[in-house]
Structure formats: C-alpha cells, structure tokens
Amino acid sequence: QVQLVESGGGLVQAGGSLRLSCAASGSIFRLNAMGWYRQAPGNQRELVASITRDGSTNYADSLKGRFTISGDNAKNTVYLRMNSLKPEDTAVYYCNADHVTRSGFGSRYWGQGTQVTVSS
Image (cartoon, rainbow, N blue to C red):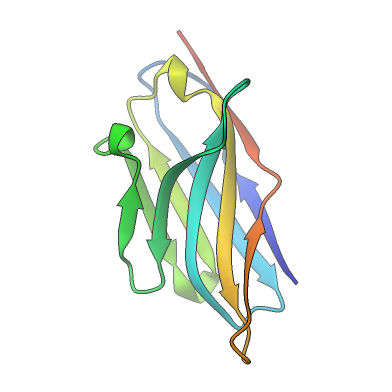
C-alpha cells in the first residue's frame, strides 16, 4: 500500500500563489508518475498536471503558464506551484501516484485532497 499526504492548500487572494506538496510513503517499489487533479463543487475531477519519473510533464491546456509541477524522486514527493490564482481555481486538489511493484503490478493511489480557495 502507498499513502499520499497533501499539504499547502489554503485561502489566498486572487493573483496570489500557493505551493502544494504531496509525499508518498509506505511499501513503495517504484513510482512511475505522480500528478494533481482538482474537483470544484458540481464539476468532475479534472487533470491539472502530471510528471513522470524521468521528468516529463503534462498540463491541462488552460493552466499552462500559471501552474508548474515538479518532483523529487528521492523523496517520493511531487509539488505544484500555482501562480496568478483566480477564483475559478477554487477546488479540492488531489494528488495521485502510479505505483509499480517489483513483479510489475501497477496501481494508482489517491490522496485525500487539500482545499484551495481563491477569493476575489
């Protein structure tokens, strides 16, 4: 089992910045990728950004230029830097991790989420 713990959410004014962190722990063999999704009230969960073990990144088109994902393989941690925040960025942000066991079995794990609220 892999546990994910997010931190760094909170209340920020429009135009401000936040940095989210997500640390993975537990029985980790290899994390192939980690990422962030978000879900606003009444909306489906949507991809924010993801990063592979070799550093390749993928972003939601609407967030490119404002959000930056980075990772630390040694710490099994992924970060999300969010700049120029807008009220529409308000959501619960979830971390996920794609884990592979020594025998090649893959699983996706999710964190419990951290609330980001952007006031106008």
